[in-house]
Image (tube, rainbow, N blue to C red; front, top):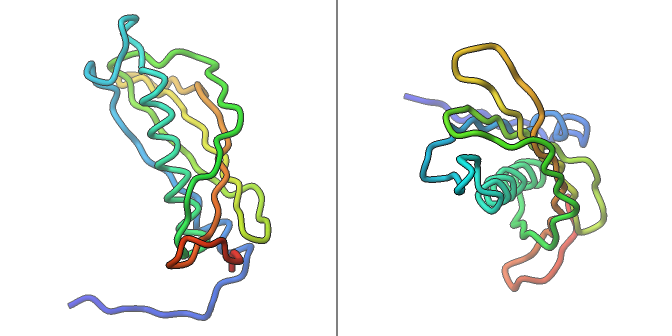
Length: 136
Protein backbone atom coordinates (compact mmCIF):
# COMPACT_ATOMS: atom_id res chain seq x y z
CA UNK A 1 0.00 0.00 0.00
CA UNK A 2 1.38 3.42 -0.91
CA UNK A 3 1.13 6.33 1.44
CA UNK A 4 0.44 9.95 0.62
CA UNK A 5 3.01 12.32 2.02
CA UNK A 6 1.90 15.92 2.45
CA UNK A 7 4.21 18.75 3.35
CA UNK A 8 3.96 22.45 3.93
CA UNK A 9 3.76 24.71 0.87
CA UNK A 10 7.36 24.71 -0.46
CA UNK A 11 9.31 27.93 -0.93
CA UNK A 12 9.84 29.46 -4.37
CA UNK A 13 13.45 28.26 -4.32
CA UNK A 14 12.36 24.68 -3.55
CA UNK A 15 9.72 24.82 -6.29
CA UNK A 16 12.27 26.09 -8.83
CA UNK A 17 14.45 23.06 -8.10
CA UNK A 18 11.72 20.42 -7.92
CA UNK A 19 9.86 21.65 -11.01
CA UNK A 20 12.83 21.09 -13.33
CA UNK A 21 11.61 18.55 -15.83
CA UNK A 22 13.69 16.07 -17.85
CA UNK A 23 12.22 13.84 -20.52
CA UNK A 24 14.07 11.47 -22.86
CA UNK A 25 12.85 10.41 -26.29
CA UNK A 26 14.27 8.32 -29.10
CA UNK A 27 14.23 9.94 -32.55
CA UNK A 28 12.47 7.46 -34.82
CA UNK A 29 12.02 7.79 -38.61
CA UNK A 30 8.33 8.73 -38.29
CA UNK A 31 9.38 12.01 -36.58
CA UNK A 32 11.95 13.05 -39.18
CA UNK A 33 11.85 15.15 -42.34
CA UNK A 34 13.23 14.44 -45.81
CA UNK A 35 16.77 15.20 -44.50
CA UNK A 36 16.42 12.33 -41.96
CA UNK A 37 16.55 14.81 -39.06
CA UNK A 38 13.92 15.61 -36.43
CA UNK A 39 11.13 17.71 -37.94
CA UNK A 40 11.19 21.24 -36.44
CA UNK A 41 7.47 21.19 -35.69
CA UNK A 42 7.84 17.95 -33.76
CA UNK A 43 10.69 19.45 -31.74
CA UNK A 44 8.56 22.52 -30.94
CA UNK A 45 5.63 20.28 -29.90
CA UNK A 46 7.89 18.31 -27.55
CA UNK A 47 9.35 21.53 -26.13
CA UNK A 48 5.92 23.03 -25.45
CA UNK A 49 4.84 19.84 -23.70
CA UNK A 50 7.91 19.84 -21.44
CA UNK A 51 7.44 23.57 -20.75
CA UNK A 52 3.78 22.95 -19.82
CA UNK A 53 4.74 20.14 -17.43
CA UNK A 54 7.44 22.34 -15.87
CA UNK A 55 5.08 25.31 -15.41
CA UNK A 56 2.38 23.07 -13.92
CA UNK A 57 4.80 21.33 -11.57
CA UNK A 58 6.02 24.73 -10.36
CA UNK A 59 2.61 26.37 -9.90
CA UNK A 60 0.26 23.40 -9.35
CA UNK A 61 -2.33 25.51 -11.17
CA UNK A 62 -4.04 25.47 -14.58
CA UNK A 63 -1.48 26.85 -17.04
CA UNK A 64 -1.83 27.76 -20.71
CA UNK A 65 0.82 28.65 -23.28
CA UNK A 66 0.57 32.29 -24.37
CA UNK A 67 3.77 32.59 -26.38
CA UNK A 68 6.90 30.86 -27.52
CA UNK A 69 9.88 33.17 -27.62
CA UNK A 70 12.82 32.69 -29.93
CA UNK A 71 13.53 29.05 -30.60
CA UNK A 72 17.09 28.52 -31.85
CA UNK A 73 17.83 25.40 -33.87
CA UNK A 74 21.61 25.13 -33.42
CA UNK A 75 22.21 21.55 -34.60
CA UNK A 76 20.14 19.11 -36.65
CA UNK A 77 18.92 16.10 -34.66
CA UNK A 78 19.47 12.91 -36.68
CA UNK A 79 17.19 9.88 -36.66
CA UNK A 80 18.56 7.12 -34.45
CA UNK A 81 19.62 9.40 -31.61
CA UNK A 82 18.24 10.01 -28.14
CA UNK A 83 17.14 13.49 -27.11
CA UNK A 84 16.83 14.89 -23.60
CA UNK A 85 14.48 17.82 -23.09
CA UNK A 86 15.16 19.93 -19.99
CA UNK A 87 12.61 22.48 -18.78
CA UNK A 88 13.34 25.11 -16.10
CA UNK A 89 11.32 28.04 -14.78
CA UNK A 90 13.46 31.12 -15.46
CA UNK A 91 11.07 33.98 -14.63
CA UNK A 92 8.04 34.38 -12.37
CA UNK A 93 5.60 37.21 -13.00
CA UNK A 94 2.28 38.08 -11.37
CA UNK A 95 0.10 35.80 -13.51
CA UNK A 96 2.74 34.30 -15.79
CA UNK A 97 5.83 32.11 -15.84
CA UNK A 98 8.61 31.85 -18.38
CA UNK A 99 10.10 28.39 -18.96
CA UNK A 100 13.36 27.70 -20.78
CA UNK A 101 13.62 24.40 -22.64
CA UNK A 102 16.82 22.91 -24.04
CA UNK A 103 17.07 19.83 -26.22
CA UNK A 104 20.28 17.81 -26.04
CA UNK A 105 21.31 15.14 -28.55
CA UNK A 106 22.84 11.93 -27.24
CA UNK A 107 24.32 9.36 -29.58
CA UNK A 108 22.87 5.93 -28.80
CA UNK A 109 26.16 4.06 -28.83
CA UNK A 110 28.65 6.61 -27.51
CA UNK A 111 28.90 9.20 -24.75
CA UNK A 112 28.66 12.18 -27.11
CA UNK A 113 26.17 14.81 -26.04
CA UNK A 114 25.50 18.33 -27.34
CA UNK A 115 22.86 21.04 -27.11
CA UNK A 116 20.78 21.22 -30.28
CA UNK A 117 17.79 23.50 -29.63
CA UNK A 118 16.88 26.12 -27.05
CA UNK A 119 13.73 28.16 -26.55
CA UNK A 120 11.49 29.93 -24.07
CA UNK A 121 7.77 29.60 -23.49
CA UNK A 122 5.45 31.88 -21.51
CA UNK A 123 2.49 30.49 -19.58
CA UNK A 124 -0.38 32.18 -17.77
CA UNK A 125 -2.19 30.74 -14.74
CA UNK A 126 -5.96 30.65 -15.25
CA UNK A 127 -9.05 29.90 -13.17
CA UNK A 128 -12.03 27.70 -14.06
CA UNK A 129 -13.45 30.51 -16.23
CA UNK A 130 -10.14 30.88 -18.11
CA UNK A 131 -9.35 34.24 -16.51
CA UNK A 132 -5.75 35.03 -15.49
CA UNK A 133 -4.99 34.51 -11.81
CA UNK A 134 -1.94 35.08 -9.64
CA UNK A 135 0.81 32.49 -9.81
CA UNK A 136 1.13 31.19 -6.27
